[in-house]
Length: 370
Image 1: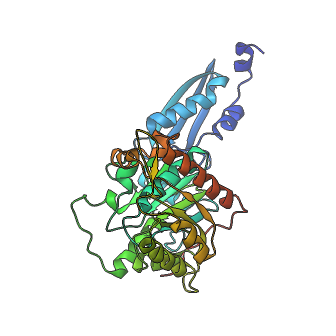
Image 2: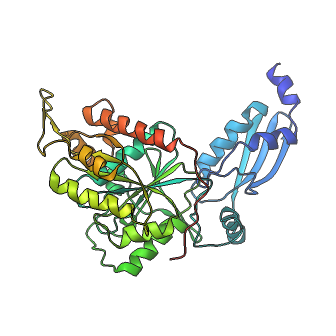
Image 3: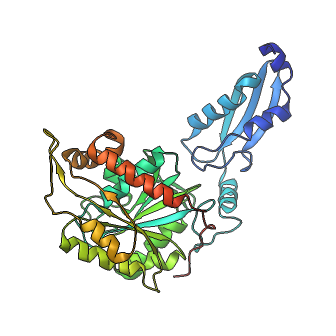
């Protein structure tokens, strides 16, 4: 069929149908479902669309998406306007399912929540979190990171994100890097500012990160826990009625024993997080010149931890200089150097995690009253 003939068959109904595939750039919902399509008409060979922009500063991306959708039907003429305060509030109510419920995990559809724990600091738990997230996202998973280490937050730097998340009414829209949505206390305080909070404030922060952040459609939310088995871990478990934990350790016995305690905390009846598996980080130093591996911290700690917790051993991540550099520069090594020893190891571990997550997904999570 000629292009002229195709345009001649264009009708408002066909335009509306094409627009059903257009999703809001920040909210992730079809703009038709959100009531953002104002007017469509056929004007000769032109396709006229008037639509509303829900979130400021997403005009250009929304215009491009609408243009792509309707171009096969004719020459696009796109007019955009911003939503008003009342309509914005109505959209937020729609996203929340009809009301504002702080006990609801603000996400669309079923999501697996996986806590990444270490028991002690200095084992590279955050590095594991960001590289797993980036690797899963690269394979098509919809991934988010909740940086729950409110004292020692490092995820924003490791993911290369600066500035604050967008605020939209009473909703926080998480920034995205390397295909991963991220929220962290590091977006709200400077690197030099200590966070001096007691348990109740930590509890409220975790609740807000889950209930006030619009995560949209997620397959998995990785939660980077602080070291230890204290308030944040307990609060997370109190909100999530079911979830999983990845335990990160290094090879030496000192780290292994503490990691086992973190895993046993997850298995406590009052916590009830299933230990998905154990990852050994810093498994050996890879010489950048000859490729020889030196077991700086010993070997076998990850497998012994897995055996003690009766959990799968998911793999070992070797040490390499670029792993540290990539964290400082904001590009996970699995993205910047995917074929390096650490990059390959992360991809193999993420494949194991994806295989476990591929089991039938559960129902959408509801946060418990804290």
